[in-house]
Each structure stands twice: as C-alpha cells, then as structure tokens.
Length: 352
Image (tube, rainbow, N blue to C red; front, top):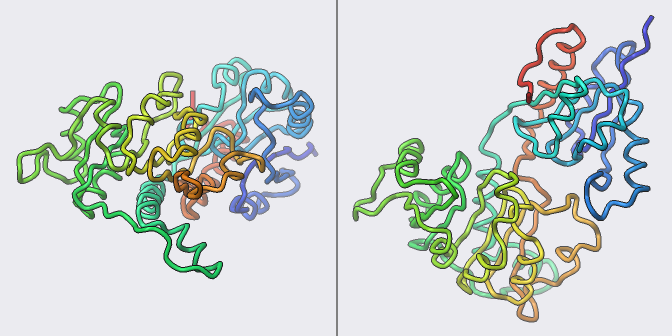
C-alpha cells in the first residue's frame, strides 16, 4: 500500500477547512494545518532563518492549500520544495504566486471561485463607521466616557472610487443610491463610455435628473482634490503598485476619509502613515496592509490614533472576503480539485 499524500493547509485562521480535509480517507491523505503565518519568503525584512523555517515547514508536503496572498510563493521558495506536486489556492487571481516558476516545475496550480458581495459590504461598513466615528465612540462608552467628536453626513458629498471594476462599481452604486453621494471615478484606462456601461450594469441610468453623469470620470488629481470619501478598488499589479503616494494623499481635503479594502501595496504605506500622523485628513479605514498579519510593533498598532492632532484610523484584519459561505465554497472546490488531480483529471480553474 502506498504512503498517504501529505497535505499542508496554510493560513486558515477560522478553521473552516478542517472538517472538510479531515473527512478525507486518512489511509490516503495525511493533513497538517498551520494557522500561524510566517513572514513572507520574499519580504526584504525576512531574515534567512525565517526563510529556512518556512522551507522546513513546507518541504515534506506533496500538496499545499494556501489562502489568497497570505503566504507568497516566489520562485526561490518553489525551487526549495522538491516534493511539491500540487498547489491549491483560493480565488481566481493571486499575485503572490510565481506562476511561471510553478509551470516550469510542472506543478499544477488551481484556484477556487466563490463570489459574493462580502468585500462590497465590508467597504460600505468601513465608510459608514469612519464617518460616524463608530470605533472611537464604542471605545469611549466601554471605558466610561460618552460622546467624542461630531460625526459627518454623507448625503450630497462626493464619493471618489479609484477603480471602477466590479467591486468599485458595486460600492459606488450603494453610496449613490443609499446616501445620494455624487460619484467620481478614475483609473489609468477608464473612459467615460466604460463608466456609463458600468452604471447600466449596476441598474442605474447613465445620467441623473440634472443631466450629470452618474459615474463621472475625472482625472486622478481631481478625484483626490474633490472627493469627500476616497475608496480604492484597483487590482494589484506591477503597474498599480504604489500608485497612491504622498502626492495624491496630500491633495485630499482635511475633512476627507480614505478607505482601502483592495490591497495594501497599492498605497505607499509610509506616505499614508505620515499624512495620518500629521492629521492632514479626517480619517482612514483600512482592511489591507503591506505586511499581513500586521507585526505587533507596526506603527498601525502602536500609534494612538485620533489624539494629539492625528487622524482617526479604523483598522480591520483583511476581513473583506472572510465570509463563512465563501470560505466553505473555496475549500469545497479545493477538495474536488485534489480528488481530480489524484484521478489524473483536468483541474477546475487552473491558473495557467
């Protein structure tokens, strides 16, 4: 009888995957779960000892299940995993995987699709929480205080979406319909014609009753100068990485709110921290960061936000997609792909 296939399941903080993988025949599969995320192999601050620790952890396994970009797989790491024969990830895009390196090694990589409105809902929740000062007021009440600072209304204000893809358009639609916000949009290749199509796709008219475009395309500069809420909805790529920096952030109104539920590296983190520490905008609400999980000594964790002239800051731990139903679908698809791979069948949603 052949030895069981060794499987590593990485970074499933909620344990959604465990009953699914444990239901596999233990005579055929030996599954290990790792909930502590080590520093990324390719991060400049990762010491060689931690790189070696990651290799030691992963080297025994034939199959690895990974969650989004939590554990990157650069070429150098892939070459140090001689036993790896299958990589299962979640979603249909993962910039943290060196797909050409996997392909050269003949290692199949399969994604999983379980779409929902989770990130859209989380983004809207962050916008509202920042505008209504929810986090600080909650802390005040729980620690013996009462009201803190006045909140701000959104009605008739300008919502600026940096990116008008599926998520950007969905959030913009909610802000326009629910709160009467005027929407402006920008991305490198966005045209007014395409923005009009997006309005139609979301069930809105191209123009409002005053003849103004529902999703009005503007320059990058105009968006950052005029928006009361700036929300980032770009796909992370070599071109978009670091595209929001001091120049853009310092254009924002002192009363503005900055929101990022896309990817941390889209924004130059040091520049955003500097702007917020100087209190140049009202607030920021962030679900994503350059390095995740955030180190305990991160400036995001150690700074006392909202005091001594600093902006108010609301932080969540990359929860935009962490919805139980979505995670269940993703891991169900991973199990099916694992079984297809063992039978020699074509994988569903191969990433190359």
